[in-house]
Image (cartoon, each protein chain N blue to C red):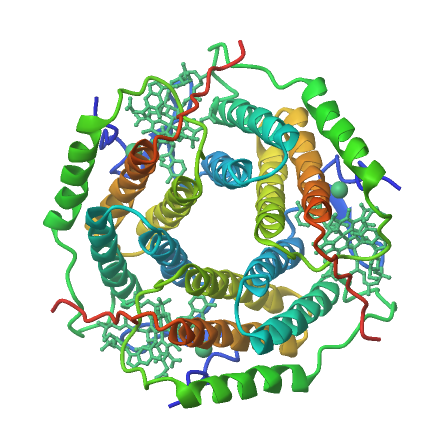
Length: 182
Length: 182
Length: 182
Ligand code: B12
Ligand code: B12
Ligand code: B12
Ligand SMILES: C[C@H]1O[C@@H](n2cnc3c(N)ncnc32)[C@H](O)[C@@H]1O
Ligand SMILES: C[C@H]1O[C@@H](n2cnc3c(N)ncnc32)[C@H](O)[C@@H]1O
Ligand SMILES: C[C@H]1O[C@@H](n2cnc3c(N)ncnc32)[C@H](O)[C@@H]1O
Ligand SMILES: [Mg+2]
Ligand SMILES: [Mg+2]
Ligand SMILES: [Mg+2]
């Protein structure tokens, strides 16, 4: 089967449930940005990093598809079975952060994003995650969004921040802090 | 001549044709995002990939400038000769997909974006292309946009998806599919 | 202390000064995008490029935090001392461009973004910088924004363009120009 169906050439698309909406609908913007985030998570996942982080990032990619399906379902109509996001998906991120934080020096300042390539990728992914969060929080003021989706995205940007620090630490990369010029 | 002309320091800029618009005008947002996409296509183009894909990506970069000029032209005023986007530019993308698809295993599920670095870049570019498409479809509801521009962007994101799979295949990278946890 | 404070789980956040705003407020969108830009600048900064550019990019990262603080401060309320962006921060970018331009061939056409990986990163950063500029110019029509912030972002995208050309030149990468197909 061909990937290009041409069904979107008139600028509309279908939610799960069948409702047609314009492609610039906030709901599409949300799952489109989650897709962008997922691509960045994939970029980090395939770098030469510790195997545990690799596994967690795969989990996260799976969960971003769950979130994508949840955002793509028309809240008014969809009776289709879509996979659920669980509270344990959120606590997993928290536990991973707690573990990584044990070995990291305490932070009292912002860090300049960067140090090495994969650390930089984490910071970029963190920012795209926050962009996805902003859009999803916006959508939630107009339409139904599962609370767990916005909370997951919130925690994921914190996870990506801690992961950036941890991968820099593993690589013995210096952390530069921002000291405001006052 | 200096690159920095300071003419945009007050927050306005000129369309082709001379009309002044604020920089956050949807039309500027559109060609600014096509520029971002073009930069990502350039990143893929200069990686170590097969020579044929490299040539096609150069063509695509050229065509994104054609699209940029088309979007930057004031539809009310511009009499300037700008280059045309052709239907054959779209069919080229389709033919390229058809050729790549011949060697690829059939897909019945989403794939987790990633696998190796250049495959990940393709997925990121695919998502930025879709962001550009959303904006351009939006602009088309308010102002004139050549249909071929939105269709080209639609097909280009599909092309980038198939290219991602093809470059992963060349590199013998495993494809992970998403199996919803139901 | 834990990084994840959960204070943002309801979709609101605090400006400097304490005012609560929704996370999709244009002001948050602005500093969120400056953060994304900063992450890209960090990616360029840690590549194998000339040491002088590395130092300038560190400076720029510092200045993007200054801009972040300026954008995050509630203009109605904040009496907190935040660091100042200076006119000399802007002229530094201009002087750096002038120096790099001395060795570069004159341009009469657009260049296809790309050539090598770090040049491509510069082009992507340039485009994100322009996205940040568009948002900030928008915010300035609704609320107070220091003029130096928008001018700095404007000049920074030009700096990133010239840096892209300069790093390509150092690496003896061919520059492809866009010749419109008329
Ligand atoms: C939401 C959605 C997306 C979202 C989010 C998905 C998510 N869960 O996060 C995003 C934006 C990521 C997306 C991306 C793409 N999508 Co999409 N998507 C949909 C949509 C609207 C719902 C899918 C869904 O999540 N269903 C919920 C799950 C739980 O149930 P399900 O329907 O059984 O889902 C399965 C199938 O839809 C699917 N599937 C079956 N056959 C095929 C074939 C292909 C090629 C793909 C990619 C998937 C696929 O795999 C799912 C999981 O097992 C459908 C259209 C529709 N209304 O159903 C299109 C649809 C599946 N997508 C499609 C395409 C082409 C793509 C992209 C290639 C587009 C692009 N150029 O980027 C990418 C592929 C991304 C990837 N990594 O594989 C096509 C597939 C056409 C085909 N049969 O070949 C569809 C049918 C839309 C269409 N008519 O054109 N998509
Ligand atoms: C639309 C536009 C863009 C768009 C889209 C372009 C496209 N076609 O896709 C985007 C967003 C990509 C863009 C980016 C940039 N642009 Co521009 N752009 C324009 C604009 C408004 C129209 C250009 C156009 O497409 N014309 C249609 C073509 C068919 O006709 P043309 O006008 O004969 O086009 C030729 C010249 O404009 C041009 N050209 C001539 N001299 C120079 C010098 C430089 C340095 C460049 C980059 C181009 C250039 O090359 C074109 C093709 O041959 C002009 C201003 C204007 N109103 O004309 C600025 C303009 C050409 N851009 C300019 C600049 C500085 C840039 C950037 C460096 C900004 C930045 N910091 O990112 C980048 C460079 C990108 C690159 N890869 O080279 C300046 C050039 C100043 C100078 N003479 O040195 C101009 C004149 C605007 C200005 N007054 O500041 N731009
Ligand atoms: C604006 C802002 C941002 C902006 C812009 C900052 C800028 N200047 O460009 C951006 C978007 C970049 C940002 C990002 C993050 N931020 Co922030 N940010 C703020 C905010 C609202 C103001 C900070 C500021 O610039 N103040 C002006 C400066 C001049 O004065 P200052 O307040 O003395 O600033 C110092 C401290 O705030 C700070 N600091 C003190 N302790 C800690 C601990 C941590 C972990 C961090 C990152 C910073 C930090 O360092 C600053 C400079 O010395 C504060 C909350 C608030 N209302 O104060 C949160 C805050 C500092 N951020 C926070 C967090 C968690 C983050 C992120 C990790 C979020 C994420 N997941 O991406 C990242 C880290 C980025 C990095 N590179 O280090 C938390 C820190 C929690 C903690 N104590 O552990 C705060 C307190 C918000 C909260 N309640 O959750 N942030
Ligand atoms: C660290 C700071 O970032 C801001 N903040 C919280 N959530 C987001 C988001 N999704 N995008 C951008 N900024 C955000 C808040 O102001 C917080 O205090
Ligand atoms: C694969 C699915 O992606 C959605 N879709 C179609 N076009 C875009 C776009 N430009 N951006 C984001 N999502 C899009 C549709 O819902 C389609 O079915
Ligand atoms: C080079 C051209 O880019 C446009 N331009 C100026 N500032 C921005 C921005 N922040 N984002 C996108 N496009 C911009 C103007 O049309 C200018 O002439
Ligand atoms: Mg399609
Ligand atoms: Mg300018
Ligand atoms: Mg938080």
